[in-house]
Each structure stands twice: as C-alpha cells, then as structure tokens.
Image (cartoon, rainbow over all chains, first blue to last red; front, side, top):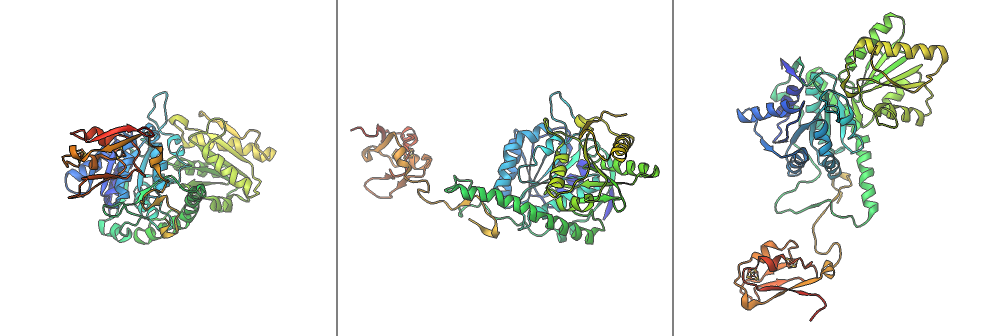
Length: 392
Length: 91
Ligand code: SF4
Ligand code: SF4
C-alpha cells in the first residue's frame, strides 16, 4: 500500500483500474472528465488492459458500458449533471436488466442557468431507479467505495448496478492523500465477475421482451426492491472484509460521529459532512450535545440504522443539497417518512443549504443548527419544517 | 427465467411467443423461383428471420407466412425482382 496525493477523480480512476475494468465507455462532461481522461491514459500507456469506447453522448456511454457488462465483463463509466440526466432512460434500463455495473457520479447542479458547482440534484434524481447509490465524504472513501461497489453489485444476493457519488470540485478536483491498495490486495478482495446471465453468441437470450403476464413484470420491480434490502447486509459484510485487508471501515450504510450521547442529530451526505463534524465539535464546546449521521448509502436507505439512533433524539436536522421542488429535500423526505412509519415522534426539520453549489462553511452549519436547537429547547418543536439557508 | 432466485426480464427466444404475427400483414411477399439468382440477400435482410434457404431445392427460398410481417424488405433488396409484394386478401 502506498499513500499518493490524488484528486477525487483520480481516486475513482485508480479504483476502476484496480478493479480490472475491461470496458470503459465515456463522454466528457465537467467535472467528471478527468476520471475518464486518466483511464484513457492508463489504457494508452499499457497500465490497464481495457477497451475505451468513445461515444457521441452519455446515453450511449451507459448503453455501451451496459452492453459490455451484459457480455460478461466489468464495465465502468462516469458522468455528471446534464450527462446523467441524458442517461436517465438507460439508468432504469440497466437496473431493470439486473446487470451489475459501476458508475461514478461527480455531483453537479442541473441548469438552467449554467452552473458547474456541486449540489446533489443529479444523483438524487436517480434514486427511484433501482441502483445502489452512495455518496463519499473524502477521496479515500471514493477509492474504497468504488472498488467495493464492484463486489457489492456482483453479489448474487444483489445483482444490481451501483453509483458512487462525489461532490464537484470539493472532492473531484481537490488533492488529498489517498492510501492506494496494491493490485494483489484488490485481486484477493474481488472475486471473478458474477452476473445473473451473460449475452453471448451461440446462446441466445432475449432481455426485456414484452411480458406475457404483468404479474411477472410487477414481481421484477418487487425483486429489485427486495434485492436492495438484501444489499444492506452485503454492504455491511463488504465493509468488514475491506477493513480486514486495509484497516479502513466506515460502518456500512451510515457513519456516525459523536452519536453515543447526542441529543440533537445533524444528517447529511457527501463532502460537507466533514464541516458537520467540525460544527458538532464547536456546538459541543457550547454545551449542546450534537451528533452527526453521515448517510453513506442513500439506496438502499438506512432505515434501521437511523431509527436506532433517532428514536430518543430531541431533534433531527436534515441538511439537503437538493430539493424535490414542491415537497422538500430528498434526504429529509426519506428520513421523515421512515421516522413517521416507525411511529417515532421526533421534531424533524429540513435545512436546504448549498443548493446550486452555494458555499457552506462549518460556521454556517453551526449557526443553522444552533438556531434550530434553541427553538426546540424552548418550544419542543420546529415552527417550520423547511428552511432555505443562504448563509449567515 | 429465474436463475439465482432473482426475477429476471429475460427469456429464451422461440417462435411465436406473441402469437401468429403474420395475421397483421397487409402486403404479402410472393416468390418467383424462375427469377431467383440464389444471392441470399432476402434471407440476410429479413428482420423477422422468416426466410429459409433450401439448398438444392426447386424453390431456393421459402417464407414462413405465419410470422412474415409483410415489411417488403426482401422484395426491395432482391436484385432480380423475384419477390413481389401483393395486397393481402386480394387475388
Ligand atoms: S416481407 Fe419482411 S418479414 Fe416478410 S419475408 Fe419479406 S422481409 Fe421478411
Ligand atoms: S434476394 Fe431475390 S434473387 Fe436473391 S435469393 Fe432472395 S429471391 Fe433469390
């Protein structure tokens, strides 16, 4: 193992190389481009034994990666924002076909207006598709989860594609020290590729034909849902296996920071969880016992883990970097629904910050949390469930 | 098909899973062996795979009308006019 200074994008590229991806299909888009540029370089200089398929659009990028994966090899692509939206039809198609595949999403605001900064709208727009979806906090996690995602998606209990998200520029173009595992270590961790069926000459299979009976079709959707529930176990196991080899584990679907004795919980995902940790430390200096729950995997949704921590909370503040316009932040909606369905009556509030890539500091987070906590301590509830936070 | 306990949207191809689609046909390809030069272009281009080649047979090709959809591709690729499209239900 060597420590290398890597951007989030290069960490993703190294992960794909170490996973021995055989086909990369890609179309450039800021801020994803340097992932596939790096892979092109690896292939060109002989460090990586793979085909690079240059396509004319993101829709084709995922279609080509999917075709390769259907044919029995590890395939990879990466995109952002409008590219991901252009792929959206194929996103559903790959999940429906149950073909394991890994895609890295560098999260970026969706236009108009034209904007390259990070929010989570693009990633969250895919959340109903049936993919496993995770969001990394730092570049080490980008590398670790991209490698692990191959194992998770190819597990026979799962057989679904997976996305690894990282924030535009905050991670994608920022260099951090990354512990780079050796090829033998990754080879011992990743078994040969497994998938539910392989399309090959001489053994014709039809995928996606009109169903004779719509009951079968509905069962397919249910099976995707159940397989995502099964994936919870697999994600946990794979986290442990990776820990045994590398000494790094994150706790499965969520990662907690100072939760043990916390009264108030901040929930978020992505790079700004680092700022949430800092904010929690500052607030604790003021005597407010704050814990942070980092949602690592948003699909499958960590219902059980969240209920475990939140059942006796005094308040829950969910930070979203994206909004389901006309309702609320996507992460908040999931948290609130599962608390309610489990009969947990905790004051819960949504802070929408960093939407469209607005910069958010740990001081901003501490400020928003401090005001919210003050209200709960005084009145026992939140007067509004949603707050658009533009900074101090 | 259900390998690994997963409910998968896959099936093995077989003739006529959706019924006899030939009944949808409006135009029918009619083959005249006397003009045929055995080039196999119709066999290659038929999108439904319903043209069979009969090596050494009197009629070099045969068309399975149960599943031929009448698209006319065979007729338009045939270099000698050995396949003519005629209206169904006509003469
Ligand atoms: S009409 Fe179309 S479907 Fe029928 S035999 Fe000719 S090419 Fe095939
Ligand atoms: S394309 Fe025409 S000439 Fe060629 S094999 Fe078919 S019918 Fe015969």
